[in-house]
Length: 214
Image (cartoon, rainbow, N blue to C red; front, side):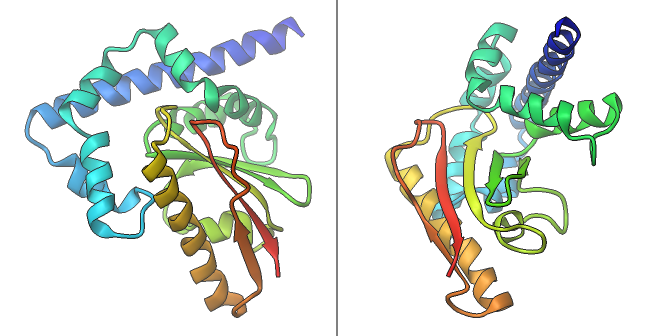
């Protein structure tokens, strides 16, 4: 048990150190004049391009980057509490794809390098956790929840910074998630194959939707 606790603590340190390194790098790039917001606007959960850009400009503002870069390790740990423990457990127990410490470290370090972290509790009883957007070929939420070997279930979306979603941001995000899943599902399997509903009552740092057949 102590060994597992030590492994979990080391894994959490990987996330925290990666977070600080990532945001310090972003702060330097933004301060140097790089338009990170425009380059990453496509990644934000909203239907309208102008809303995505507005979210990106807030997330990748010089002020926000400086605030994230200045957080102490304890402050990072507290901020990421909404998803980090679940991610650490997932990484350390997922022997199928993360069988070595090197794989686990790379996976955990990469979670903070995108805008969101998603957890899918599949109806089959399995769980899938990853950064979002993901790598090429695994970007859309349909594949994570309904396509391929997926079987529907609950999708939980967190900001990679652990911050809360505003009321309008939550509404826009929920609508975008629903549309992203159903547009692909309708094209791949036909209209009505899947439904996406928002149960409500979320923690401020979580957007959740239920994906089910029919």
